Amino acid sequence: MYKAKLWTKDFLIISIENFFVYFIYYLLIATITVYATEKFQASPSIAGLSSGIFILGALLGRFYSGASIERIGRKKMLYMGFSFYLITTLLYFAAYSLQLLLLIRIMHGAAFGMTSTATGTIAAEIIPKERRGEGTGYYALSMTLAAAIGPFLGMFIAQHVNFKINFVICAFVLALSFILSFPLEVSKPELTRQESERTREFKFVNFFEAKAIPISIITALVCFSYSTILSFLASYSKEIQLADAASFFFIVYAVAILVSRPFIGRWFDKKGENFVIYPTFLMFTIALLILSQAHQGLSILVAGALVGLGYGNFFSSAQALAIKVSPKHRMALATSTFFIFADLGCGIGPFLLGFVIPLIGFRGLYLAMGFVVLVNIFLYYFLHGKSIDENVNLAA
Image (cartoon, rainbow, N blue to C red; front, side, top):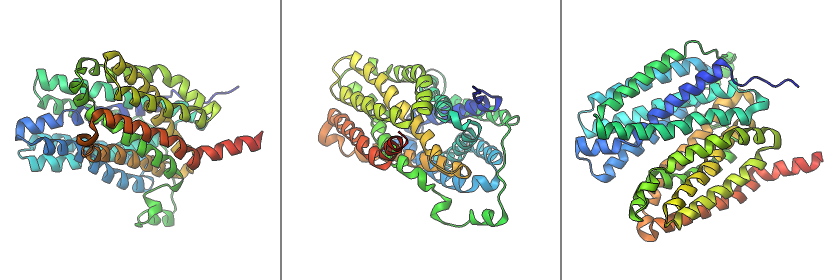
């Protein structure tokens, strides 16, 4: 039986480029607060803003690229994104005030939003339809590796060399990414003049893909819960005197995803999304419950593995599902819709939950987030899973 080829030249290139895009994002978001504090004597809240304001720019970039990429062209949008990403990275060297740094962070976020939407859309086009889950899973590994390598390298350089070397590395990586784009073969959708003009109109359908919204809402809530790990795990582990174990959390997280991803992608394609997504909710819920009750380093590491199996595999499966349920000619909007909701969940989470921590503590926070993820099982069932089960019963 013929099996569509997945590991093509174009798939490898776009996966590598996506790794670079997210490598820069994770490297700087994990270290920019220290830079703002040391260089501009920023308060903790303003230093946190210098990190989180990036998400605002990313949303603006996604809105623009999602609505314009089919008119402008996918590869051209990729070139534009990398160029803007490189220029805004170089602007960090000219940041002589905290206010200018915040402005640069917004622009840098917009460049990230444009570029990541372009890489995601191109990947969705390249991946064969019958291997959507498997291909998206492997593609998403580029983000997983970036999440593990970026913060580690950024913090190491900031501590042992010079923080500005981080900016040099980011600029070099982006220049390399731009060059890597040249041999990439990407089709350009043929739009009629009327269709092209329609994409310029300020309408809901030009910024969001309606069919991708249900799974995107669920993803926002899951990312909202995951943001507590990104933002507060370091503080929590220090409070309970398990900081050494927590330093290996994301390594275990990445290993769990690397080991499980080949199976998860194939199951998504062969057995359907419900077979994969329901267990990921349960594993993520259990991980948060373990975190909330952690008293030993082993608990932190077990939670890290379960977060990888749960959240990590949910995210790639949800991304594949957003594209699967959307019309082919609106893959770009489906991709941007998915990531807009994901960014909102990750961006709003730390800000809102920061007010809750003094009331319930870190343990109460992780316990509450476990409940939020558990509720998503029922939300997913009513928004999507139920219809799949009914179709399977009818087919039987």
